[in-house]
Length: 355
Ligand code: SF4
Image (cartoon, helix red, strand yellow):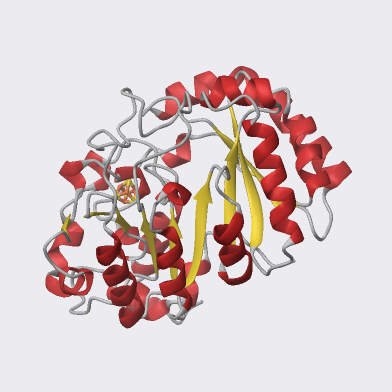
C-alpha cells in the first residue's frame, strides 16, 4: 500500500513551493484548507486542547461560534474557483455538529475538491454517513476510552456513547463507499495499557487504520516528554505487538507516539506551511495553521466582511509576520515539513546540478 502519512507530499507541488518565499512575486492558492465549521461539541473531553487553559491552542475561542450557511457556501465556491485541492473539517467543536453540514457537503460534491473530516463519530449516521461514505476521501475518529465506562470518564458523554460510536463505524463500513475510515487513539497515563485491546476491537469492526498519538499536556516539549516517559516503553511494545498480530493490507497501524521535541523547537524565521495549509475558524478568522487556531494574535485576518479569494491574494507580506523561532515554541504539527521545505529552498542555485 502507498503511504498515507508522509512529510513529502508537498513535493508534488513544486510551483507552490517555489512561490512561497517573500522574494517571489507570486501568491498561489493554498493546496489544502482546514475549516472549523463550528465550535459546538457534543462531548467535553478532559484533555481537549481547545478548552484547556494551560494550552495556547484555542485560547481566544468562543464556544458558540458557527459559520453561517451562506458564508460557508461562499467559502466552498471560492476555494473551488481558486483550485484548492482538499478541505478537512475539524474542531473547535465537532464538525458533524455543524447544523449545515449536509448542504456544505452537497455543495462540495459539485466541485473537484476532495474532502475529509476529523470527528468524534457520534453523528456519523444517516445522510451524513451516506454522503461521506460515497463522496468523502477520509474520516478520522478520535478515541481514548476502551469501553462505555472509560469513554464516559474521558468525554463526559452519555453512558452508551462508546458502544454507539463503535456501532456507527461498523455501519459506516457496511455502506461500502470509497471513503477511508481511520481512528486516532490518543494516549495518556489512563489508557496507555489498553492499546492492544483497543486496536483489536477496531480491527474487528473493519476500520481501515489506527493512528496512535500522544496526548499533548503542555506547551513545552520537555514537559510532554516527562509526562510520557514512564509510559513510553509499554506503549511502543504494545503497538509493536498489535502490528504483528493485526496488520494486514486492509488494516494499517501508524505509530505517531514519538518523542515530542521535534514538534517544538523552531530554528527558522518564516513559516512556509501557512501558505500551504491555512485554517478558517468558526469566527471567520484565517489562521496560519492548526496549532495557532483561535490565537487572535496570530490571525492572518478576517473574512467576515470579504471573500476568501480577495483576502488570500491581497498581500503577500501577511504570511511573514510570524517569526517561528520566537513565536512558535509550542507544539507544531508542520515543524519537520517546514524545515524540509526551507532546506529545499535554500539550496545554492550555483551548485544545484551537483545532485
Ligand atoms: S511554525 Fe508551526 S506553529 Fe508556527 S505558524 Fe508555522 S505551522 Fe504554525
